[in-house]
Length: 101
Image (cartoon, rainbow, N blue to C red; front, side):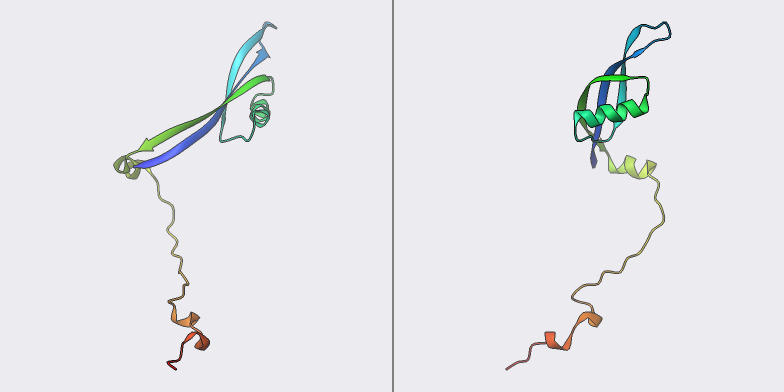
């Protein structure tokens, strides 16, 4: 089971309609924002005609079965990385060997 949390903000505000009247709108800002002001600033960048009024933060749990995940996921190029650890022969220093005195 794959579990993730989807973070987003719903920013509510107003903008001028075509007839000049104010109309209520909502803009969805993907990702986590550190504050309400940041969310409103991002929403303003997405819709320049918007005057943000308030923002609410959402954290939504998402799950996906392993079988479904492997059906729809696309794997990129596989890179092999060598682990260098204390058990590697080339990392043993002669001073590390304890004498039996």
